[in-house]
Length: 208
Image (cartoon, rainbow, N blue to C red; front, top):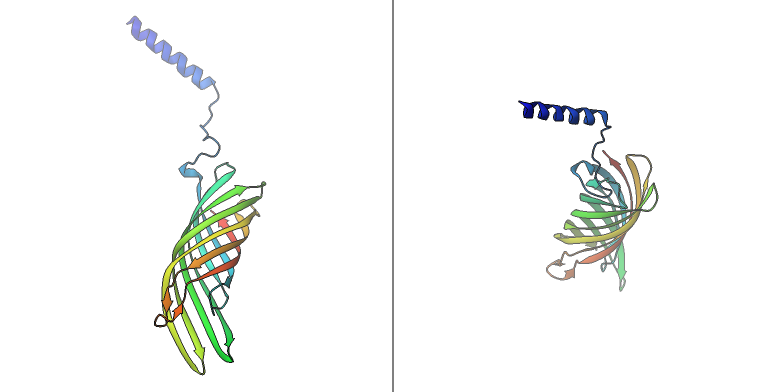
């Protein structure tokens, strides 16, 4: 009986001490990842592409991105994304007094990763890479005749840019990307459709 009374007394003292002491929720260490740090981000970007391919036009378009963004207190914040876009361009080329027009359309679908390096309270350096598959079509027109071919192949991109946090949930981005698309040969293996491009990217995103 004495042992039981002693145990009850000891427990009562512990409960009283705990209730008297202030209580703090445990906080994750700076930079550590927890499920609550990941936020969905929706963004739209406009792109202009300077195409390196032979007899291919520069293109322009837009793409939509859905990302999961790590908002933990850290100097490097991680972001994983999936994106889909549409790009189009046309131009007229002259070779040996022969004029022909080329049109290029492209629908890239990619998965990507970005490292957001904090520079100031409102500015981050964004370094990213993405890869996926691009659907497209190439059409050539000359002397009132035209030929076209549907293409598809692997694509990847490497980029860098600046993100400016305008508010707690809205940011704008300006960046540069180098990408390459591997379509292989088309038009009965007469035309090499692999090409690279240098892109100027301007976008806006919202965190939820």
